[in-house]
Length: 443
Ligand SMILES: C[C@@H]1N[C@@H](C#Cc2ccccc2)[C@H](O)[C@@H]1O
Image 1 (cartoon, rainbow, N blue to C red):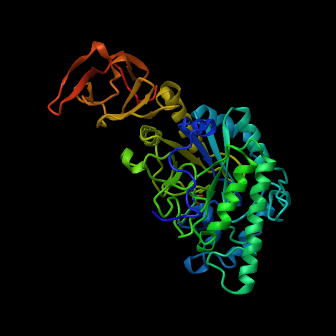
Image 2 (image 1 turned 135 degrees about the vertical axis):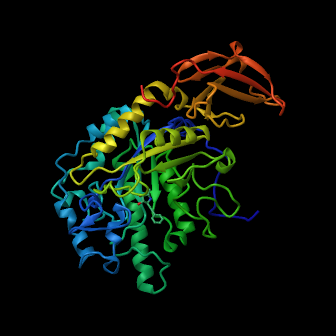
Image 3 (image 1 turned 60 degrees about the vertical axis):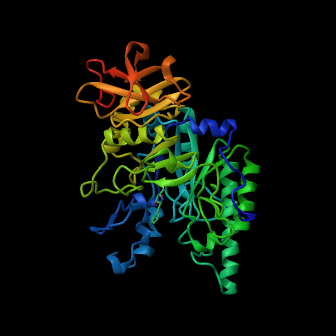
């Protein structure tokens, strides 16, 4: 084992109340919003083929309009979202069943949706002027939804930003100013918005930042002291050998694993016994608003519900991303998806909130989650014989005999079902699905 000064400072899960609250969320909403919502993935009739929130990085050699960067960097002067109403967003999240939300205070372009004292590139200098982060934090708090602030380390047009490790003296000096700027903004966010429960870091892969193990370690400690109980994921900092998410001894950095971006673990072993979240886009890879939803597959509510249950069956939270348009409205297609997920959650959220992995053989008809001695069997692939078999290894300590199978919220008493031993010496319960049962079909 390596002697690390700036690796993970804790082994095993955090066991304080704030982290248990995080663990119990089950479902979250991510909102990506900023100046990038104005172009919405295209400009002057030319489409950008990357993620809409990355459109500033569009180069002329890959088809960007002439002087695109300069054009983009003036767009904030048009940012005046007349349809923005954080209360509408928050009510939609509530109806969807989200217990927490993650909001982009600034993305890689650096435009701050709060009146930061440390740069002029903020909402104050846009026609909108008002503090959007404040409106969001307050609206979600009013709905009882916890807020986490997304913060991009990358700031493409900050004079001191460097992606590669600075070598020349003037670059090193510039980067020192960028580090101080970054620290100042993070302290400012925690002081301005004390309601926030955590920071969701992104854009921390640059060599220049990865090379700052000691400084970022010190900064993380300072932020945690500033806000006891603060939750920070594995993406914030690297150890002194440049290892991210997991230090050079394989111990997770931060409080939960942030590696599951647009992907999910398959087995509980993939999660290494850690807390984790999966953040998921509705199109294949668009976080910010992209006007064109015709040229790619849009996930259905069923797709998202299946992912939600897979995440929760493996001890993870599932966070669905929404990208409001340049006027601040969530597009009708996204609102419809949120409503459908909410209808399903209305019936089945007991199998989502506060659950843990059930250590039984995973059935092929759906997923298992559990809470205390109650087992939730969420059936997505209805067996042709209408029987779901629950196999419990005889060695298992968790015999759900006292539990109920909640199948689409229909409690089934296990003692009333056919039991036996299969050839793998598992005890099994064969449960006939009630007539009309459907976990996934919308009511
Ligand atoms: C949460 C998501 N992370 C961001 C990214 C990225 C990215 C882009 C290229 C290569 C690797 C990672 C996306 O823009 C979005 O904010």
